[in-house]
Length: 218
Image (tube, rainbow, N blue to C red; front, side):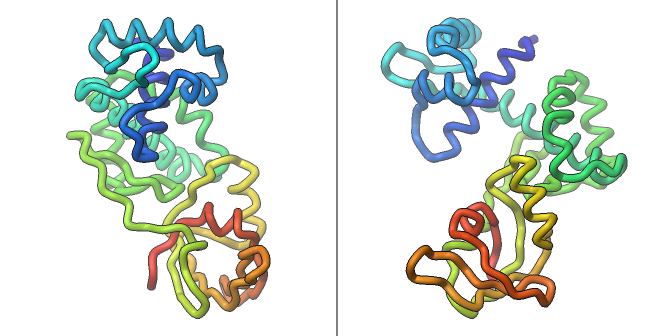
């Protein structure tokens, strides 16, 4: 059994590798974990001894097959608990992350399978992120950021990149939600801000906001 801290490192490495790089640096892990590089090095040595990561000093870090399986299990539990908190306990989507961070370390496979069944096997969490299945299979995301689309495109909002409470609260205030139809009316050449229509309201959003909203073309 791995400690909570070890699991947090494994998940952090997985998340960093999602960018497409084959390895991640000790400094990148330290930044994500909000700790010193020396502390990261000590943990990496422990994870390497358990054969959860491939690690050679100055050459970056990657997950072994065993490590990736553990990472996907943690992510599965996190996203299922987020869905449970929103659907059954009336949490808002900006309130669930920290609670799910605690619940994701529960070790009972039976509990998680029953939770999945109770929720009717959801494919995505409240933020639109895909939920790995019991075998660790993760559906490829087909969505793109809103900033990649053009004038007159009509899109459906499927998720967010930024999960921070501040961003999610901004989306709530502005009227965005998963499943919303978004029509692009104008792209401003100067700063790439967008004029859009959502729920019959027309307004501008910054390019940063557009980059953090995931959509598919309708």
